[in-house]
Amino acid sequence: MSPTSADDGSGGDSRLSGFADHCCAENTRTNTVRWRIAPGHAGLANVRVSEIRSTSGGHDRVKHLRVASFASLVVVAEDLRQLDRWVRRDRWPYVACPVCLVGHLALDSIEAVPSARSTRIYEKTHYPLDLSGAFHGLIRCAISTCRETVAIAGDYCVDIDVDDGGDTTYVDLFRLRFATPPLKIILPPPRTPRSVVKAIESAAAVIWADANAGANRLRVAIDELLTAYGMPRFRNSNGKRWRIPTDVRIKEFRRFEDQVADTLEAVKWIGNQGSHESGLSATDVLDGADLLGSALKQLYDTSEEEIQRRVRAVNKRRGLPPNKRKQRSALLATQKQCASVG
Image (cartoon, rainbow, N blue to C red; front, side, top):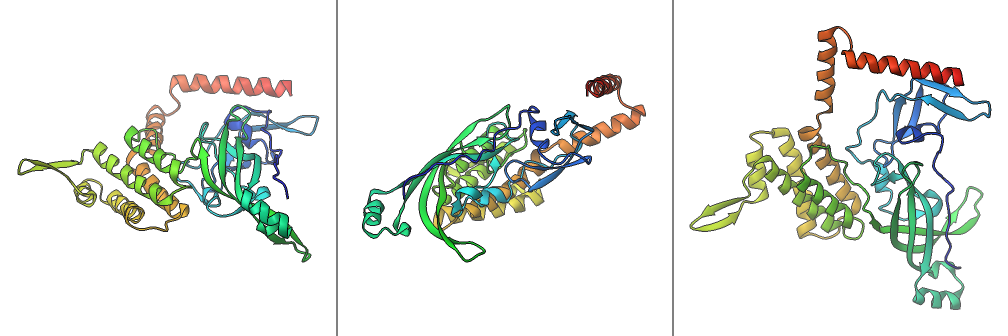
């Protein structure tokens, strides 16, 4: 059995650009498109479109797409967890593009490299299960305006697969240990302090190779968050400077954000396990990342406040502001032009 490589053939959709690119792949006879959010963030989201027309060639084309609702990208869901196990080439999960943050990464190429020792054993036994080693490959963003790649590497082995008819085949299995640029484990709100974002990125860089280190770096993110919020990091006593323990800082923080403090405390316990125990998995760290992402959303996500501000503005004016009316008129003109061309 020799090293192999494969291309999944999932090239980007060139009919649209940016976000709309990905929505066009689904059946467009209704006003609701089921769109796979890139990293498995909450699986499938409902995205409504305002106008969809079909070309004579049978291919659906979106003349104008207006996103009316879009699931939050703050919480990373199950697709990343699927990489915390052995995966077949044809079942590699979609994960978020760490560059554009909109598209999903599909497997572009992968090559298994059996170790010299396992190859020598295989040459004697001719038993495929004796092969093991490492792999390397690329995953590529499916959106045509991005198409960025992420280099991946990890462990490789061979196992037996039994189909529905009872026939057995040998399949290559892969387990991720390294990805660069790192895959996003949290997509923090824009107002999140840079020091917190850097600590999260540091955790994402090591999570697949050393989950314990990843958990510890999430705890560092908590300390950075408390510092950014104004919680003292040190105290002076008897002429010496002492670092204040994280749990004491969280207790002080609780005076201002009681519910968020509970969440940070839970992440701290996971970080403690990473520091003082062994055996944490990447899934454990992703659980902690979900909790931290929830805390960041409560502290720094202002999207709901912005929506309420717009609601008040429309109600006060009993209609859209003048600049919004102009934009709406331009939008309607564009729709009519597209309809005439179609």
